[in-house]
Length: 199
Ligand code: NI
Image 1 (cartoon, rainbow, N blue to C red):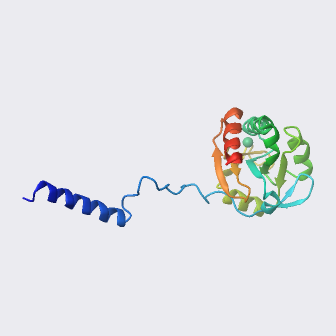
Image 2: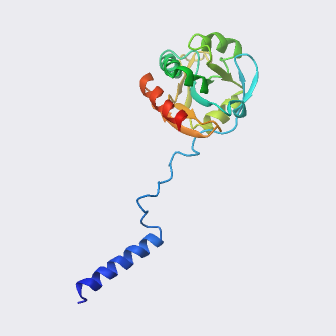
Image 3: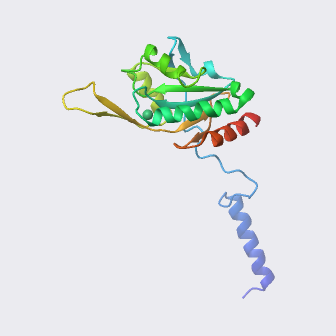
């Protein structure tokens, strides 16, 4: 039976070895953000003024992105109202945030249809659409759930789109910063965005 001090030394040596092996992370080290690089990427879409847009057009500002569609009966309008309120509540700093609405229903959401829709929520909200392949790529990059639901038999035109309802805040270089779950208040959105803009 070793003396108590020897046992302490053994424990200390075992602890040091575990640190060296990376098993125990020192308290001061920040764990890697598990959501970093999980959302976002390059895209090529068309805005509601028929201009081609890519993620590079929004470098330097903070894109606030929501995916939805103009025929959405409920969730989309509610969320877009919240986003518009949050951007307005940022006052001057709101100019650094670019709200974006990316359609999950490109077959129906043409630029001409998006234009009056987005301007009814906020004068700076940009609507984005594209080909089915473009939208499939961008929803994959942001991991947005999107399922077409037929509403009448033998009528392919009568459908709704089940879709993810998260709002994504991206950084000045297009990197993912954070996301807001459905139902986040404008007050909270404003506070969180202000913290990221100041950082
Ligand atoms: Ni919706």
